[in-house]
Length: 310
Image (cartoon, rainbow, N blue to C red):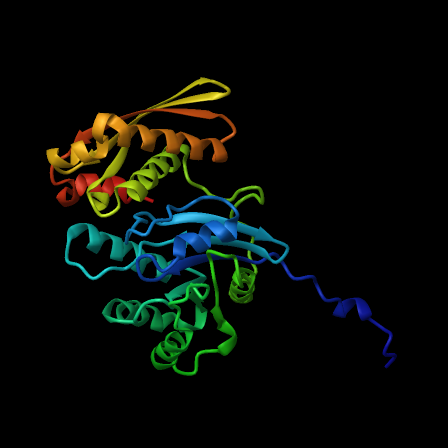
């Protein structure tokens, strides 16, 4: 038989596009939101030193020549029996099961205690689709050797090429993490147009911007006792969006803290939120911001269900 015959029967088809839904898991303040913002090139998640800043599973989209990665920034898992924390943990657990790949962000600056054990145990059944990023290597407190020892203990025989030392803050080895995730991504049509970097609604993004500015300024005083309610959005013209919003707190005493002396705190939160909005949206955003008391809202199912609806 002539070796040159029927060569068309053996034509290799080009590989299709790669697409993956990727869950980011890790302890509170491990750097998950920082990674998401760095990888996508846009401010998507709140970045704060306050644990459990992220409450919703937030999508950030990375498009490269290798394909599309749709990231979901799950809430930092935290040991607590409070209703809010239990709901946050359920969001993370459900998201892990549905993902094509998982990015486990490990904070190299902290000891790996009970919370880290919980996360590792939750992730272990899905080890075949995990990439582990040992984060904050730029920090003088980083103990990468200890982090690697923890990984070896919890994930025996885990592939070395899927353990990557990273600084999300300084954008070091972030591309290596992305490449490892692309290796796990299946061939599938893209979920979003290439110009998209998030699927968040405008109302949700603005509420998160306001909440982030508040949390970064209130620090340990009332951060977990607040949520933001958008009362109304009005497009005044093509260059101006008017937003009527409320920062809701649990107690009357917290209201004064958020307002600040001479309304200085609420003014700063509003001004900085408007500034951030200008960097994101193609139009100006003007915010009318008030403070409201919603007593014990963290124990109210109807409030939690509204806040945690993805």
